[in-house]
Image (cartoon, rainbow, N blue to C red; front, side, top):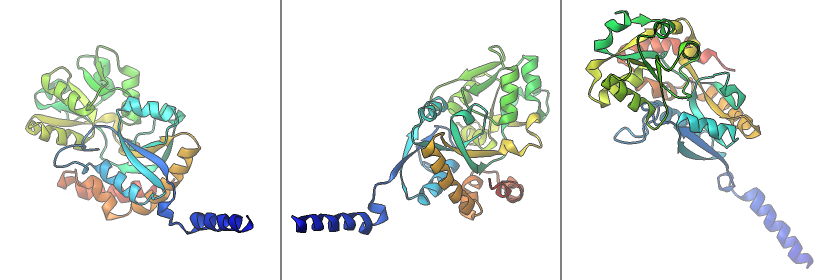
Length: 291
């Protein structure tokens, strides 16, 4: 009996301390991904080449303590998963007061060009014929319809204008699959006059739909001079698991954001003429924020 007990202790020691780390049980981490190229691209020749796909891959490679999975989820499902305290994170999320109630945020994970208004070129004069417009004024005037995704944030300034001045007559709120694509189809059909989004989002969708020469973007006055509109973050559920995950993610971000591989994830989708200015801002703004 004594021999059997001693043998059991030895076997337990071997299993606990001599099994390689990679063979031990890993904690779960599900990455929630909206169907919204070029953030995430789930199908076709460019599958996995969206800039948030690439950033997620970098994070996964440096977080071996987790068993990583992927979950397609619209923004409403993001909210549900976070509020339920599930072991879930999402790579490129704007901070909002509402989301801070049920998510922890990393340091900035993505630095983009600021959101714009996307319009059909033949509607340019309806927006005053100016390349920079006030979203608040457009909404207050009430003559044009802005399409937006339910629960999606477009950055603090645009969100504030939408929250303050939107009503059922000047704003169409869409909730469903393929948010950006379906809003683009509504824009093309003339059911809405504009939608907020990122410049690379506009050009990707316009090109894949064969209407790039028909689409243009307008700078949003409320965004000017505010770098927060260019920053998004990793968000995880607001519990002890999420706090630990964010601490680990922050370590990876601090090490990887300065690398060419990390920066190139977004540059892959930029107009070549804007890359020089982007790199300057990347160094002077994005990399300076470390907490």
